[in-house]
Structure formats: structure tokens, C-alpha cells
Figure 1: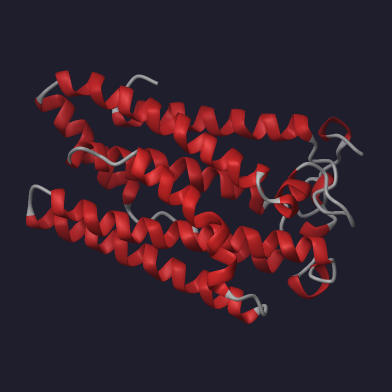
Figure 2: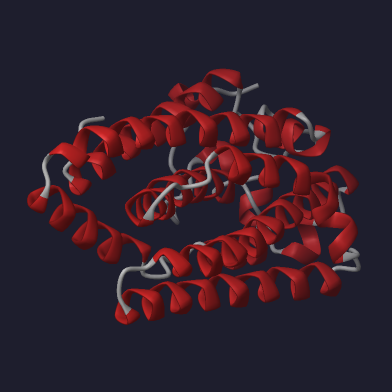
Length: 252
């Protein structure tokens, strides 16, 4: 197995360790049954995550203090549902039954949301910004090892739905108005970080096809992405979380 240290960037900027599957389109890459199974798992996990995000944001809108805030969250929820539809349609297009693809991930996602249910408006905003961003970082890391067609879809549905600027503005204003809430929200964000990372690790560990793809794979899947690189991936996600905490005005 090659290592990242010995890798030479490809002409298109893709690391050499990823040019197996990553240089192919879906038609070529899906010839590998193992890879196809990994993509079905990935799209199933993403699809259920987007559906759950839609439900959560619609519910959180009830906590909004103003009509403008309620409308903003409703717009975010709508965007999440459109992302779900794209993923569902893609699963159907590659002859995978969408409900069956999502089913293995439903309990884990539902457990995460149950364990991190916000108690108020500000906690809901921090969760939308911090929790969703951690999940997006994880899936963006995975996307670098996908075929070009699947990668484009995944990156497209991970586009910011407006969580970022809206959450930062509201949370910073709240802390400025009442500095005491900063400590509470910082503790909440740390809890979200731990739960979100655990959820991402479970997604990988519990699905053989996904874990095989991430730790080196077969048939050239993600060649060179070894266990050490998986650890580095989670380190990058943690660093990105620290930057987001600073943007919110919270201590990491």
C-alpha cells in the first residue's frame, strides 16, 4: 500500500493515491461490486441525514423568536429536503432501492438527534452550524475518493444552505447581549463535537464496504488512504471545528 508521504500530485490536482477510482466516472468505477456497495451505503447515509435535517430544522423553527427567523429556518429546511430528493433520485437511477439504502443508518442518525435535542433557540442554531458542519466535513473528505460523477453529487448536496452566516450572526449577537450564555453554548458545542465524531466513526465501522474504501480498499479503491490517514482526517475535522467555534465567539 502506498502512503501519502510518497504520493505525487496528479496533473489535475488530485493526489496520486486517489487516482484509482477518483479518476474514473461512475460507469467505469461501478464495475467493482465492492465500490458500488460503498457508494450505495454512502448515498443512503447522506440521504437519511438530509431527511432528518429537514425534519429537525422544521421543528427548530418553532423555537424561533421572530417571524423572520422562523422563515429563515424554514428556507434551510426546504433546501435540505431538496438535497434529500437529489440523493434519493440518484439511488433509484443506479438501481438501488432508496428506502433500503437509508434503513441501516436511520437508528444511528435518529439516536444522534435524540441525544442532542436543543433546549432553546440558540442551542438549535449552534447545532445547525457546528453539528451539520462536522458531518459535511466528514463527507467532503470521503468525496475525494469517489468517482467523478458521485463526487460531484455529494459536494453539491453539501453546499451551505445558509446555516453559516445566519447562525454566526445570531449567536454572536446573543453573546454580546448576554455574555453569560457563551459558556453554556461552548459546553453544548463540545458535546455536539463528541457526538458527531462518534456518529461518523460508527457510520464507517458498521458498514464493511465503506470501511474498506476508507482504509485502502480493493480494486484500487482509495489506494493509499490507510488507517493513519483516517486519523489525520479526523484531526482535520477537529481543527475545522475549532475555527467555527472561534467564528461563533465561543471557546473550543
